[in-house]
Amino acid sequence: MSKSVNLISGPIDSSLRKFALPLAFSFLIQNLYTWVDMYYVSRLSPTAIAALKVCEQLIFFLFSIASGFAIGSGVVVARRIGEGEKSKANHTATQSLLLMLIIAIILATFFYFFSPLILKLMNIKGEVFVLSVQYLSMIVFGIPANFLIFHINAIVRASGNSVFPMTILITANVLNAIIAPFLIFGLGPFPRMEIYGAGLAAAIAQNLGFLIALFFILKKFAPIELELKSLKIDSIIFKKIFKIGVPATLQLIAVSVNRIILTSIANMFGVTVLTTYMFGLGVDLFVFMSIFAVGAAIEIITGQNLGANKIDRIFKYHLSSIKQLSVLLVLLIILVFLAGESFTSIFISDPVLIKEIVIYLRIAVFSYIPFAVGIVSLRVISGSGDYNRSLRIVLFIFFGVQLPVCYILSNYTSLSYMGIWYGILVSQLVFAFVSLRILYKKKWISTKV
Image 1 (tube, rainbow, N blue to C red):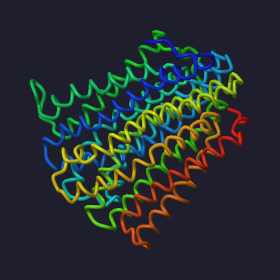
Image 2: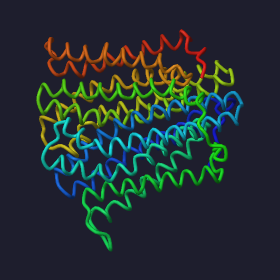
Image 3: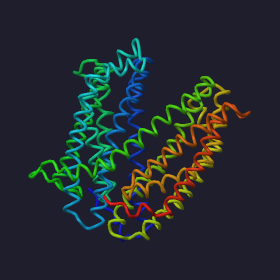
Image 4: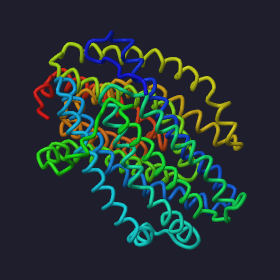
């Protein structure tokens, strides 16, 4: 299922593009998954939509915990591959998958029994509470498979193959899109299950996706081989994955908490400002998919080249990623700046809200390139296995710079709520500067994994 890209000795610019493009498409597909479910559920009731959004927040939090360990596994596997230790890479991949299975079962079991209590603590009441419990009672059976898919994709991507993960994600999402309407609306011989059906369809698709991914790995269509004959816990490997996985998980949780607090600050100024931020953030995240894809590619590239002791190539890839992203982002900036109003008008009819969103977007676009510089620099550091250092950067930027600046500018200056938008811009400029400075100090190079 496609050969791995040679990230250690291949040409810099084209290797980066070849590896990052399927990753970008994977992020796009994953984003579409939410919209497909939303489309079907929106045919039930507005309350069902609210319940689905509540459940998404809970699942994202669980996913943040699990994905941190997948990232840690990918970093270790990439390093072993760079060192030319294929057998050790396979051993690490097998052990990491075993660890993920254990974590996934524990989290899913906890979630199954305690999700109603968690919803009550979130102050979810009435019909939204009932529908949320119904949805979660079904999708919980797909959570382990979903985590394992993500984990398999992470370790295969670490080998330099980004097409395999993209294929598995497309397959799982297509299966969900096909199965969901039959179970939600009771088409053909199937009973009408409504939101139960949405959760069950997602669980079925995730389990089928995992079985397909596992089948292709066992049939050696992927560059990673699992050691299933001598499967037993290796505590040394577990410790290495935990050492990277815990700070990686904390980093993802920090992003989630930061977004919640920013939403709360925006909400202080009313529904219009809150809606402006949420809609604008949606546009930003669409643009950022290309940045996240290149960042994920740089993380693997760093691990492999550090293992191969080709430090100079890491910095060449870093420079190439900034140049290529800048070209793409300039085009997207122009598009958002000029077409933002027309795009917003497709979804929103209120002229006041449209005007506010356009203002937000025309400020936000100036943060796109600094954010890209910050992300790719941070991912070089993370790719070395030094996730503690990258976690400190994230905590400093989000909680030491962004939140205080946004709050102060919006509450204690004449900028009012627009101080939030300018605060985000300022924090991204600081992010780029700090990440670059720490990158070129090169302390991360000596990290052992």
